[in-house]
Image 1 (cartoon, rainbow, N blue to C red):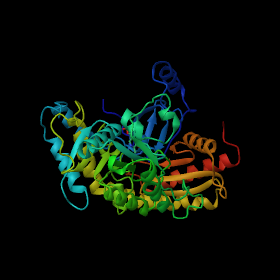
Image 2 (image 1 turned 90 degrees about the vertical axis):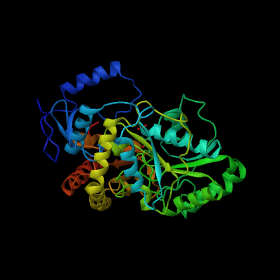
Image 3 (image 1 turned 60 degrees about the horizontal axis):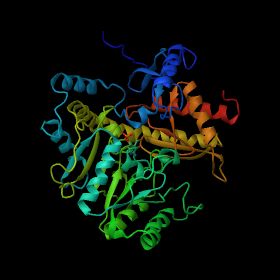
Image 4 (image 1 turned 90 degrees about the horizontal axis):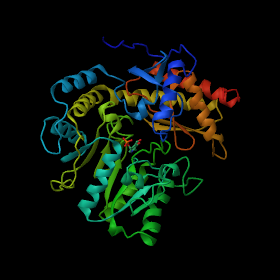
Amino acid sequence: MAPQVIDQKLPHLVTELPGPRARQIIESDQRYVSPSYTRSYPLVAAKARGAIVEDVDGNRFLDFSAGIAVTSTGHCHPDVVRAIQKQAETLIHMSGTDFYYAQMPDLARTLSSLIPGGGEWRCFFGNSGAEAVEAAMKLARYKTGRWQFIAMQSSFHGRTMGALSLTSSKPVQRKGFGPLVPGVTHIPYANPYRCPLDHEHVDCAKACVSYLEDIVFKTTVNPDEVAAIVLETVQGEGGYVVPPPEFLSGIERVARKHGILVIADEVQCGMGRTGKMFAFENFDFHPDIIAIAKGIASGMPLGVMMARKEIMDWKPGAHASTFGGNPVCLAAAIETVRLLQEKYVANSAKVGGFMKSRLTSLMDKHPLIGDVRGLGLMLGVELVKDRETRETAPSLRDAVVDECFKRGLLILGAGPSTIRFSPPLIIDEEQASFAADTFSAALSMVESGTAAA
Ligand SMILES: Cc1ncc(COP(=O)(O)O)c(C=O)c1O
C-alpha cells in the first residue's frame, strides 16, 4: 500500500507528548539501544514529507532540525525517492573500491564543476561526515609528509578517532577515549559575539589569527610539521558561529606561507545550507580539501572528501571503503544536487533572509535573546541571562527547545546556549513565520517562568 502523503504545511498535535505508542518505543529503546545518544525530547518519528514529520501517535511536527541539517530537499522528496527506487531496482551495491560504476564519476564531475574558480577536483566517497574528515586528514598527511594538524576550539568534526581528535565542542565527546591521535593543536575560532580572546571583541579575527602565527607557531608547533589547518567554514555544533571574513582569509594566508593545506569541513554548512552551494563561497576563502556529508544525499548516508586534482594523487590501496559511494546513495545525491542547483539553494538564501529578520525583530520583545546570526537557513539564536554580561543560559535554552517541541516545532540546541534553526531548504515564508512565532511564544513562557517542567 502506498504510504499516506502528508500534505500539511504546519503542525497538528492529537495526543499528549509523548503519546502512548511513543512511550512504548522509548521504553524499548532505553532497554536495547546504546545510551550514548543525546535525545533532547521524546520525538518518535514514523513518517515524514517535506518539512513535516509525523510521530507514531499521529502528531505532526514542523521540522526545523532536518534530522540535524540533513534532509536538504525535505523529507522524502518525490524526485529523490524515485531516484532511490530506480537505482535500488537496478544496482544496489558493487563496491567502488574494486569495481567501476557510472554514478561515481557522474557525481564527482558535477561536484567538481560547482567549485568556483575552476580547476579540476577529485572526490573520495565514504558513508558519513566523520569518514570524510578522516579521509581529509589521511590525504593531508600523505600529500605533505607532515603529521600535525591545527584545529579549532568549539569545533565538531565527528566521532571516529581521527575526527574526534579534531573535535573540541564538548569535553563529554572526548572523555574516556584518550589517548587520541597525536599532533592536534587547537586554537581559538573567531566568534564575533563571544571572542574567545577578547571579551570586547576588538578585532577578534586578527587576535585569533595572531594566536596561531605569533604564539602557537613561535612557542609550541613547528609549522613545517603541520599537514593541514582544519576548520568548519561556519561552526555548527559549536553554536552556529559565522566567523568574520578576515579570520578565514587570515588563516588561509598563514597556511599558504608555511605550505600547510586548508581543510574546510562543510559537512553541516555545505550543500546550500548557507544560501550558497558551499559555505566558503560567502567568503574570500579557498580550501584545498573539502569534507561534505549531511545535506548532500537528502538523508542517504554519503560522505565526500573533495580535493584539488594535484593534491588527491595518492596511489591505489592508500584509502578505500566497501560501502562508501554506494550507487543508491549516489543516485540520491545526484538528484539532490540537481534540485539544490535548480531551486533550493536560492530558496535557502531567500527564506533564510526573511527568517533572520523575523528572528532579529524578536530581540525587542525578548531580553533572553543575546544574538541572532547565520547565513541562509543556517540560523542561530544565542540565549543569555543578561545582555550586558552575555552570561550563557543553557538550561533556559533547553527549556525553550522543549517548549517548542510541545508546540509542534522541532529545533535543536548548538553550543552551550544557542538554538539552531536548520530546516529543510524547501520551506516557505509561512513556515518560517510559524517557526518564529512559536519560538517567540516558547520564549515568553520560559521568560515568565511558566514553562511546564
Ligand atoms: C561539521 C561537522 N563535521 C562532521 C560531522 C560528523 O558527521 P557524521 O555524524 O556524519 O559522522 C558533523 C556532524 O554533526 C558536523 O556537523
